[in-house]
Amino acid sequence: MTARIIDGKAFAEKVRAHVAEDVLAVKSKYGITPGLAVVIVGEDPASQVYVRSKVKQTAEAGMNSFHFEMPSDTPEAALIAKVQELNADPRVNGILVQLPLPKHMNEATVIETIVPEKDVDGFHVINTGLLAIGDKKAMVPCTPLGCLMMLQETLGDLSGKKAVVVGRSNIVGKPMAQLLLNANCTVTIAHSRTADLKAEVMAADIVVAAVGRPEMVPGSWLKKGATVIDVGINRIPAPELGEGKNRLVGDVDFASAAEVAGAITPVPGGVGPMTIACLLRNTVTATCRQNRID
Ligand code: GUN
Image 1 (cartoon, rainbow, N blue to C red):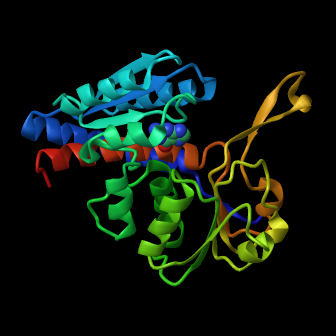
Image 2: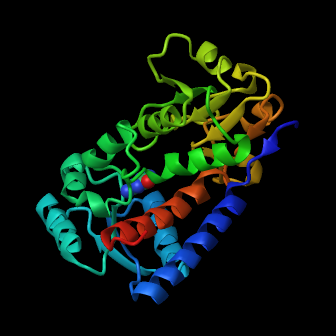
């Protein structure tokens, strides 16, 4: 293996320690404790794991953590009423509604109910619009923000780099492309209908893989020395670990990619921990903006 491993876990610990310092400062100077409310609807096991981590780490950073669980048959109107209640609650500075929502709900309608100032996910159209025009007031979605921070930590200034984002989701692919563009990269967004995906990846100095397909990008697609950020978290059967066991893999084939890349994030221990650290950071940012604290 030749690639440097980008240690998202260690980086996230640093970010969280910094957040905890900021929380203490805001508490002691202004008497304000930042608060994050997380709402989960239904019993999706993966979502429950993520939400538990978010709630725990919020409290560990010294913030108020509010956690609401609603059954999967909750009417959309009841979820909207909950969001409106949280919008009006001065103890709540950030609101996160865990996605995906049950099929009978319209995610866009629910997200647009969150006041943009408390939208710590950065999913509200006001925030996606602010990000698109490069306005610093945008709340930036946590996963792409974490990816950008790791890229800047690894490469320094990203100006002039060729970046390919594989995947065009609203949560990761599109905001990732906007962030890279704002950082002066030349950006390609590739997706399932891209004619020659290998050629697009091969041309890139920076590859962000966010498609949700296990080990889809092999090392043979990479330019020598490329920096690879793997957003995928896929569970695949691992009979070698015992009957019925699974293991976590990314969207990149780590073993072959690490032979060609200059630097690469592992799965797990790469992007995942940074996402939650950025959520905590966004909550402090939201608190400061709401209270006009620099
Ligand atoms: N589901 C998967 N990732 C996310 C995220 O970053 N935020 C929310 N709200 N739901 C998610």
